[in-house]
Image 1 (cartoon, rainbow, N blue to C red):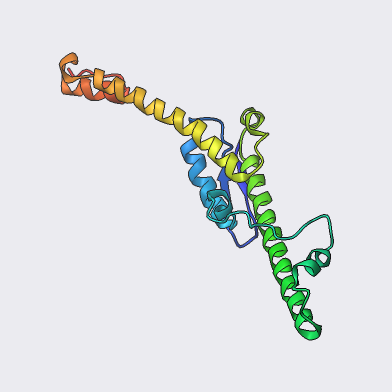
Image 2 (image 1 turned 90 degrees about the horizontal axis):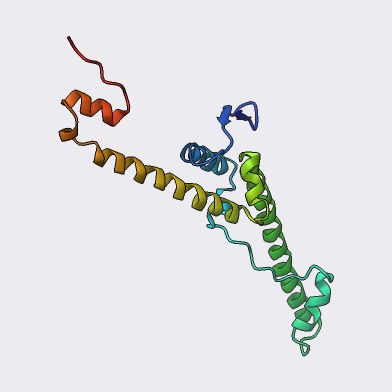
Length: 182
């Protein structure tokens, strides 16, 4: 079952098959990376955009934290400008954190949406899109590498000396049945 991805009428429709295991991991990863980049959330998944340091406190109003931080010996307008500057820093930090959180939630949702239920059970406890992406990559890239190693070992065992002719050797390597000429 493939899912069609369509954001707006002017964008192309893309079919992304849910990740089912190592058999479709390479294709899924390529399409998913492209889609996450198009949605402008790849930098959160890749770690290029880190969670901003939070300078603000959720439990108290921002102004409750500002007053003790401003030099107590400042008076009048100077003190007011210092408070406003500190408040501006807090507001900017809050906005950066809010934007990062929005992008993180969207990235996590996109990745989780395109993995099969059998896989989602095993990764449901991961909290960030980066953790989720890294776990899937570690799990299925390792399996993909093992498959390649197994195929390479089979290829090494299938030598020309063990086959009657070059045609048979080639068909053995490609997994096809040889066709004999008369």
